[in-house]
Image 1 (cartoon, rainbow, N blue to C red):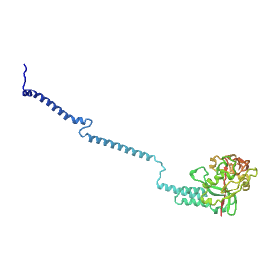
Image 2: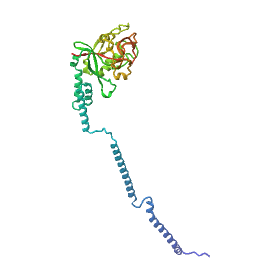
Image 3: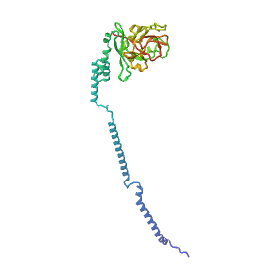
Length: 349
């Protein structure tokens, strides 16, 4: 027989179960309430972990900054300790310039005008250095000085690199006076200034069409002489003198400021082979100029130098040998080991 309980009785019997479930739920909620904060902040050190972490990052950044600053200071200190000793202050610079100025004055007083000129020039705008340099050069190359020069004397005119040291500026060119007229003088460079082929293409050209003529009246003229000095170098007729020893084409007369002497002129203006011997500049030697192993002038090896006519044929050019003799048959025109002694007329009126 089955016994059927009423609804109220069933409720009474289920109440303990409901209460037990509720208690369990409350217990779980309590545990969650207690554990949740710690679970949410598991990787931090507490409820203030965000600010603490920020402080930690700030502290670390500050530490890095301080470390970098210390490193920079150490680097600067090291750099300062190894700085070049030639870093000088204004007082030291003034003292050095003053000493160099006194040295330039001493060179001038000792008669070494060119060295004094270079010393004053190197000082730039210090005191009156630039003006003094210009005055020294002006006096050495002035018309008054030129008018006093006689045949056989040496004069100064123009500047060109000669010691193969570009750091100390160009050197004054010395010229030998070959002839003197009322208002002008004929001069030739004392030394071989350039080592250069007469005609590198070996084309059989005359002086009128020679690349060496173009060089002398172009680049050389403009490098060596200022505009004022060029005004003192007249354009003259350079005669197409024939080679007296060979029936080669002398070409046509030319109008030049700078030229080479001819066979006839070297015989006219030089009295002996010894007087035609020539030394060379360091620059010409550096360019490949041949120096004699036998012939010397004052103990220094001499060299060959070009004349302006064709030699035994149109692919050769007459020259002066290292012993000073005139060599009318010449050497091949494309030889680069033969030197150049430019000649010019200078107006002294």
